[in-house]
Length: 343
Image (cartoon, rainbow, N blue to C red; front, side, top):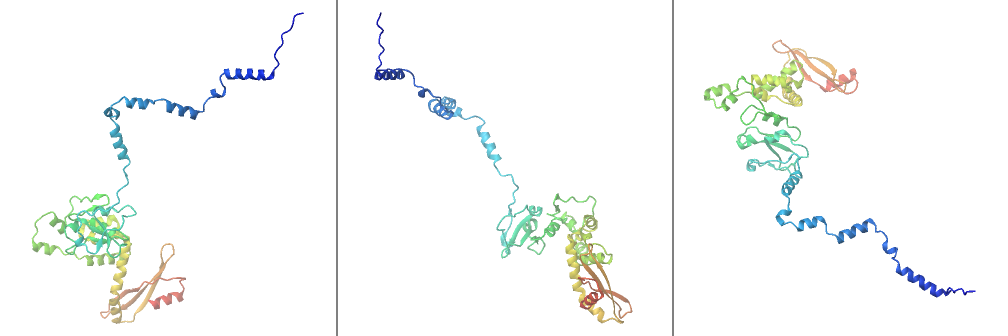
């Protein structure tokens, strides 16, 4: 019977053999896959980029592209602010001839009116909240210095300055849309004739000139009152065009705001009150009082006119309005009587 060979059973020897076998194989941990971030970092640190290789192989002149300068210029132009300039232009102004005024402390918060394309925006030296318009033509040609118009308070409205710029005279004739076209075949006024350079004798100029603005305004207001016409009639373009065709001086004398017409009418009434008192005191008959009440559209305000009827020393019947009080509350006889006594 043959002998069977023995297998060593020494535990220490088996452990040593297994250790030698592990060391001879490649480590699994050393071959683990890298994360994307680690892979990218390794590539950047170990490899030379295409861009760096390209620029290292080029000269300094060839490295800049031909269109780079144009592209930079285009980018610079595109970054420029394209908002409308709201600043003030004081070219040609002489501050020595405007001692009451100064430059505004700040630019306007809103878009400036078109009138400032033809003049200066200034403020009072001691009240910077009051804004004025100075006509550039009238200032440069010293029309204002000789007592002419050309300076207007535009703190609340620009209508007066706009009307001044619209005058048909040298250096003016402007509207919001540009230069006002002159009607072909229109008869020229004396001012327009002189401005065109036509020779006019002094005797003829004195005989034809001196248009009375105050008298024309008074007649215009009386025309509205006598015919019960709306005060806004004087501001309507068709009416003003008709007046301008007859006499440009008359059109320039009219108001451009119905509120201005109403203010003038009240001032005219207050101016004539002493004359009314004098006429009543010289009445040759008893004075009879009548009144007529009405309300405005919408019923928000109630008025009634108080009229005196009498005969003067010549026996002519006179009808004079003496008051136009505002009637508040109910229109009872007691309230009407109270307002008549106060009038």
